[in-house]
Length: 249
Image 1 (tube, rainbow, N blue to C red):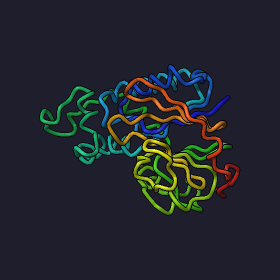
Image 2 (image 1 turned 90 degrees about the horizontal axis):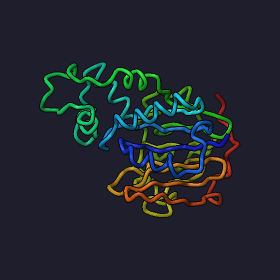
Image 3 (image 1 turned 60 degrees about the vertical axis):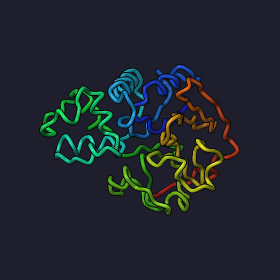
Image 4 (image 1 turned 30 degrees about the vertical axis):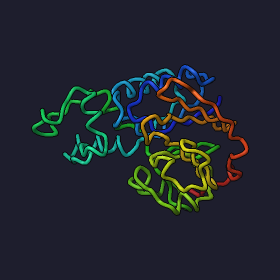
């Protein structure tokens, strides 16, 4: 069983389907880890959630993490927190895709997201760990196991101490577009970020940018672009050498 990690999708169903069709994986049996932020900004958040639910129903080895955008949706629905609806955060695109426009809402209680989607999002864990790596949406506190870390940190942090100083067990993360991560960890405009034990694969920050997927064992990068292209890059020589390092729980 191979392991694949997919970065922030942000409602771009076409790019996810391109990966599903073109990556040489067994989507019914291989391990696939989604790093969160399935929703917002893109045009088809409902379609992405549906597709990921289909994958989890057909493959017990699919892991889906909670991102800050899923958390903002829940906070809006549960507590009336309007952060999700701030235009810069992208929730309005999801709201529209689910059939609602902001001017039609009198109160957040008017928002009707399919119950199956809401309940699925409620089940999403804040991190995952296996023999190879730790997987988290935003990042870790160096020297601290994620089980001991405030969940707000796991879904929201943008910390240079993590980006530049983390040297624990190999960690895959999303949340911060790689274009905004330290330059020394990137080798091209939409390349992924690799520095010490950190591997950042959120390449969803710009128009025309790709959705990224890494095969963990071989460190092969697959990127699907809005043009319809799927590009492959071999990154074995850039694979961190600390993959067996452990963080004490």
